[in-house]
Length: 277
Image (spheres, rainbow, N blue to C red):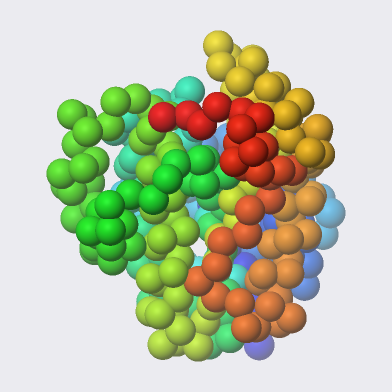
């Protein structure tokens, strides 16, 4: 009898922490765009006695994501799907941020929504950035939630003249993530599966280090200082929350987004931090 399958897209800090937290006794299908990072993470898990399969994936390619979903289904019942793939505002131009963080997320929902097993659960690791902006016009939000993935990047309000910089692109993409989760909860529910989002704040990962050492590093440090918690968090704290949302005790939770930011957004709402835009 095949083991239950857990798919983790993105083998960086948060993805690897979740894979380790969820994967023991299951078949872990670990996927990443970077083959070197992927193989290193997979070997570390195998050295700790996990059963791990790997596949290179580009979430901005439907064919690539579909191939990953098909491989997952071939390994056994797909019980958990976790998408941690993403680009930060300081890593890529506007178009690429939207391709990976917005379109790629929608494609993962669509393709894995076809193979997730009854009783399964999906989770996207989004960002507190989605909570930094105010609500978009109602029609724009409706399209972000419900438009077929292959139509998203053609929407007028996502064109170059409407998105002034990568930070705005990132915030829109992350807001779209939890709008999409609400819509996909209905589709996944038809298969007896759930889907949710986590919006982390500043987590101690290589991605965060890249941002902290960039020209916008002082902004991140200011967020930490203004927040009630006054600290960053390790990936394991996100993995614990993911374990709850993916597990049976969260059986009544679907279409939700969990903000885990140490209070950064609360500090913004209290006027302790400027609202980016």
